[in-house]
Structures are given as C-alpha cells and as structure tokens.
Image (cartoon, each protein chain N blue to C red):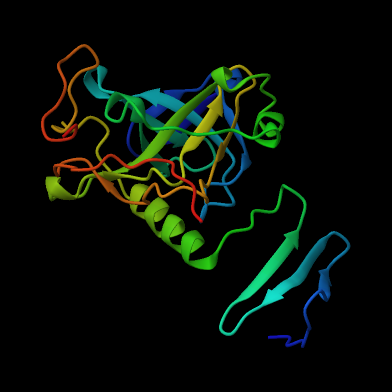
Length: 84
Length: 152
C-alpha cells in the first residue's frame, strides 16, 4: 500500500480525474472530499461490503417458481405483520 | 436470441428488452446485460436474469407493494445516467433474499435496482444518506417503518 502524509486542505490525485482532499482533521476523524467521475462509484467501505455481500446472497436464489408465502398476489389483500 | 439459463431452461430473449446497467450491481461488475422476467403468480416479484451468464439471476421485489412509503430520490445526475426526463419514468425494485428460514426473508432497501424501461438503462443505486437498511426483514412485525431520513 502506498502511504502518503497530507495536511488539512492538501490533496492527492489518482490518475487525471480523481482527487481526494483532506478537508478537516479532528481528534479521531478525518473528513475527506472526493472528486471523481460519476462513473466511478464511491462508497464507505462498510456500506460497499454490506451491499456486495447482500447482492451475493441474493444471487444464490435458486427456485424459479417456488412459492414465496410472504407475498400476497397483486390483487390480494395486505399481508400480515408488515404494516404495523 | 436464445439464452440457456439454469433456472428457466432455454429462453428466447428479445434483444430490445435487454437492460444495460450503467452502474454495476456491486460485486457483479462484469455483468451489465440483464432481462426482467415476471415472477410467479402475479406476485410483486421479478427475476433479473443475466444475459451474459445463464446461471446468474436475482429476485426483485416491487417494494411499494409491501412498503408504500418507500422513497427513492433521484438527482439530476441519476436521471441523466438513465436518460430519463423525469423520475416517473424510472421503475424501482429491491433485491430479495429468500433463505430457507422464512423469517429471514429480506430485501435491500439501501441499494435498489432502478430501471428506465423506455431507454432500457438501469443501475444499482446506493441511498447513502438514508437510514434504509441493507437487510429489511419482511416476515417480522416491523414496529417502525424505515424512512429516508437524512443522516446528520
């Protein structure tokens, strides 16, 4: 891992169009500003990992037609338990 | 074109129906072409079947069928990416996980799949600034509906 030391208001560039700037330093927290093309998703790592894991769980779904009893038919009445 | 799938056997795919993901489903960066297949029995479910890998499919829920207040706010940039002129053109789905234990059936409200049916462009959106959970359990009584309250 490349390690760089930066002060408040200093940046690093990744390639030509990604900039990561140290906006604010606090005792045990740092506030970063990230400028990147919108095509590059930027997420907090724990959010990214939890979504990635859940997507992987979702991709394990096997059955094409198995009954999923939680759901009413579109025309049916409201299901139990979920609304209150 | 014909597509071999593990769940549906061989299916005929109309190329005009293929969705292109402009931003990936996280963890599935390699896959950008999918089709929507209606789920069983008029349920608010859809299959999102990969066109590039017959073994890859996700089960999607129309979240408003179970959570009428679920809200996704689109930025102008979101609309631009999906080439939509208004948010009404965009359909919202959430990924469903159905484990053997029915009490663990859950959907991901944090990262919905949004689709512009007209332009066939789609993406997984991350609602970073809401408290919608990644795992929202459908079978358990929910005392409090999740909201898209902004984080401080």
